[in-house]
Image (cartoon, rainbow, N blue to C red; front, side, top):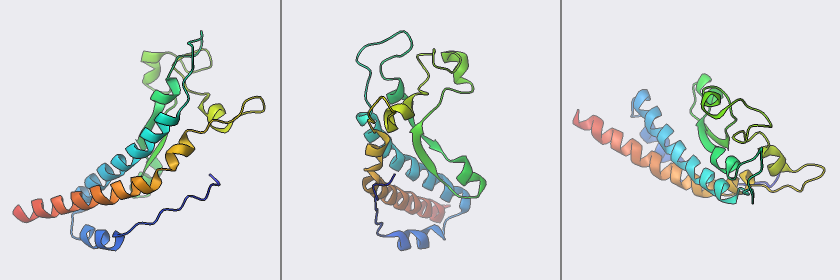
Length: 162
């Protein structure tokens, strides 16, 4: 996005110091939970802003894109040893095709067209919804800091009693 969204985090240094005292396995579990909760803030805003089809057509169902907006764990971050989540539109792939049918334009359960809606086309104006969700990054960052701090404090207390 070229909107220049800026987020400032306060309390990061205290969180880093607290994290150094927690074992890696517990640290990752608590931080991933905090990241997911922060991602849920962005996801909910994007879902609320996602346009819904007014009438069902043969190859489109109401709310397909809205239901497909999810928070997922970043495989790229995991491979590099980091933690990360992202909010996006989940494509119709893998095991979901057994239940919902093959991916493609003729399947009303496939949200493949989400980027046409988000970015527009030559014949259609853009109706951004993920960008609206990204506008909630500051609120998501505060949720992350609150939840991560609480998780680390809980882990430290639990570790002290063991």
